[in-house]
Length: 312
Image (cartoon, rainbow, N blue to C red; front, side):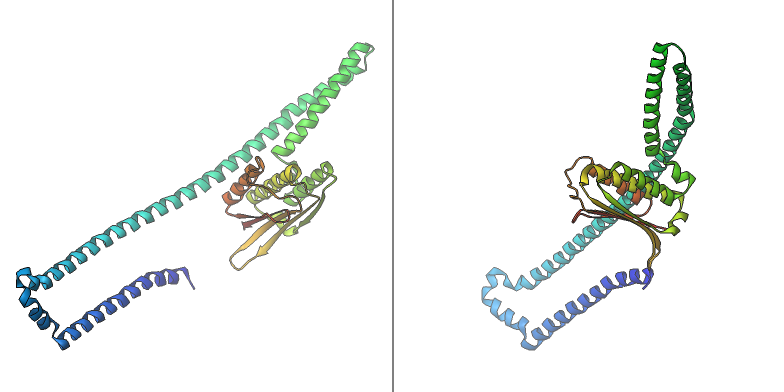
């Protein structure tokens, strides 16, 4: 059934109900009129009210007619007010929907800007600071080979400090912009991310299943999937207390449209809404996914399951 046909049925249903109510009201009036004509109710009422002429009971029909007209006028006014309220509510809902679309577009733009800034900062750190740190290490290595023992000792300390800075900067570069994502594509970046995470958490068994067809996704989808998995693994390491993690990435062809699905499962303690930090991470993942037009669903039973669906 098409959307146009559904809308037409939605419009015809109230009209059909109004037509049925009008027929019922007309039938009731005709039945009352027939009963009044058969039993001469008006004449009986006139004879009954004649002894009570001082109370002007014979004016009751006129009073009832006035009440009926007043009820019709009041109902008409109320119907107009209800109609106006419905129009205002529809306008408010339309405005809220427009604001939601604008907020979603703004979120997408903010994330794009964030990724561009991350790429720029990572490039500057790698190209500029990396060269200077390498030069410092080379100069320190040259000083370490001198005959002056004190200078050689200071040079060794400089080499050690420089190596520490380079190692920290390498980790920061991975957080800002994973090199494998640009150089080798999504699947290789995910494999590298998971391998590095497993090397840091040897007590957690992690399984990774990737569909090779996911290597041809758009750049925006690659960023969303990579960041969601990165944040999810960080949350698992910090909060879940899990011993097993399962990650699946595949393309599904549903009845509506094809989509890429990312599923992350762990057997940890799940999460609590009051847990600071974890909630912000999940909120960030949801905003990132919904900003790309996808959906994120959580199942907080026997651990935590994260289901991400991104349309292609």
